[in-house]
Image (cartoon, rainbow, N blue to C red):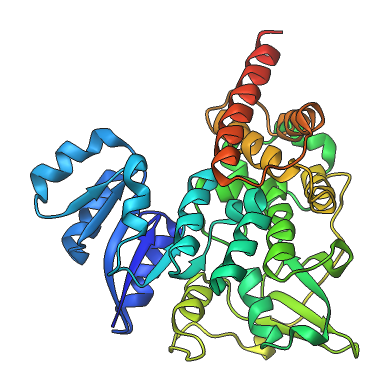
Length: 382
């Protein structure tokens, strides 16, 4: 039995991972990590009885210690100590946002078996993490449904790859005219037509920034050049992505839109575990594919350009500014249509060479978040 640490255990991916692990006795959840959902964390601790718990907000430590005094607790200051524990065999990183970057680094640095659901790790620090993974012979196993699909379709035949085809649902505003974006509310944006996800990822899907991040992530994961990554809108969300080989053959992965499937594959590959929710090709009917509207979804175009500028810090800028914008949007302080305007302004103003130091990237991320906040506040006052 392998001991697994689940980072972001109280989020959508983390909860699904725990449910998947219940179906098979291969893993013991030795540790969980969460940021602010303490009520759900308490439920998980009672259920799982972990040895280690990482707490994003230090103020929760006292409450948790009074309830569960035998657990060893960790915070941001002691994250490196947690990730170096010899009895942790496997790390599943499902943190949301830039909080997941440093844990990815420590997992690879400490030669842990590693599954990644945190897009921002590769968006911001793709070269650092993939170089380190190569040096330490650590495989980064993807959990995002699109990257898992590519991983499965490749089947280890990387040498025959021509290009990958990332599919996108198009989100809730696929058929909206761009002029309607100014009237989009938080409630509208949080209503995704196919997937049940956390707030941040759901808003990113509505702007298609999420797909942009996936372009950058795929580039680093599969060692691609920009022209090897196509994005197509596939509103049915049945084809999770596809691979085109040099002979023109396309192999696609089809399944119901359920994150338990890529999680299970990452945990148990090459074995598969049984799920009841299966698709019927006859019942599906037609499957549609179309090009994304890059004029309407500007952030996807911006992210594609960011991957072309891999030696620049655009990925970091996109991610940091996006996190701040989404927080403001969810608090009804900026409009949906303001998000790309603000992010584009930050990217153009702070364009610079990317650092090769993971800790410097962390500092730069915090600086850009502060600058984005200043920009938004100045726009709100004007």
